[in-house]
Amino acid sequence: MQSLNPINIVKDSLDGETCLAVYNPQYGLYKFAGQGVKPLYQAIRTSGGIFIGAYAADKVIGRAAALLFVYARVKEVYAGLLSSGAAEIFERYNIPHTCGKKTTAILNRAGTDICPIEKLIEGCDEPSEARERLSRFFTA
Image (cartoon, rainbow, N blue to C red; front, top):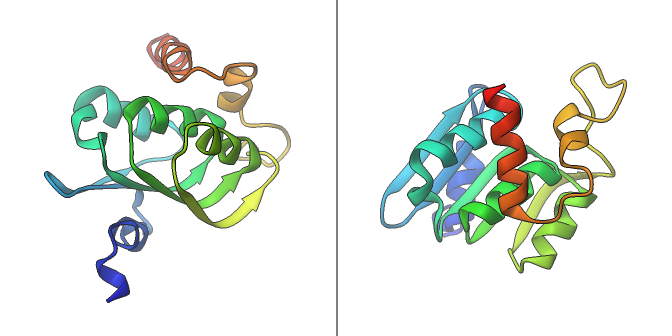
């Protein structure tokens, strides 16, 4: 049955409130609400162990989120919207990924420029460095 596939479990969990879903066979299903990269960053910071070897789905994944998923050591990822930069990160780190839609870049909420978080991660290819940059940004 297709719906029992772990990646489909997290994919089907994305809804109006849930922007991030994580399924770890050992710990179960976790859902997180919010917008942008912050829910992912906070979830990894507070409950990072659930991500190791887990299946994750996020509504929007750019390079920053992709580097965080790599940092957290997920097994597989689904994105409602995936940037080409994020796809490159997942390919580099051999993380299987699928998406509903692909885009060249993640834009800000107004749709007028590149997302500020994506700008913050520009030139960064190391997951731990991306986490550090985001940590400084979110605690500033």
